[in-house]
Length: 298
Image (spheres, rainbow, N blue to C red):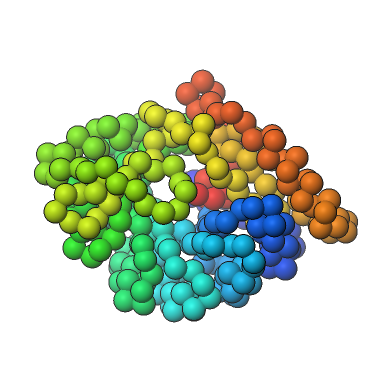
């Protein structure tokens, strides 16, 4: 979250669960097989397991997953698993309580760890820990986080910071570290064996030799993966974002509430996907994207 918070979307602008289901149904009828419920933080939306139940029942949808900060996970994990979510991505940038407070602005470290342990016990698999690599903040915890994941059977993914807007651009410049540095740290203790994981995402995976733990590297800056990017994001207000690093988007909520039929909705989605840009321009134009990740979604 930006310092001082941000203006949240008004509730009347939220897509209803029925509207979300209709859009996702159109995507699955066009061949999309994987959907992730993300945020912001998705678990602050009331009755999110009900949405998961609706989406997991869609014909053709093969994989429904969830990204969360895990603060509210312990109380909802069982309902989410029963609703059809099997895979989790959990944001955890540090194992130190005081650093957690500094990075997030909240003293919720114990709740996050409790949520992870409950999710593991219930049977979510895989559980992937997403760690944003931050020079000067958590770059001394690379080995610790790997060992934490090995001991608990989690997968681990390191992510480079992305400059989102003027504030994000300054923060990224201050704390940016290429994941080649992270990989070099890991190689001082582990042999990294090339590996793969299901999910169709941008990470390059290695198994930590001697364990069952996979480590992934997501490198939007130092080694961008734009040529193979297969992601779009549907925001709570019905805006379809085609790229995190560009401002291309298509507003779907007005079309739904004006009565667009299913065939025209699918045509709109196909037309929108043609707007997906060839690549981001974080390096060339780091301040052109003025939205925050907390509102766009990760």
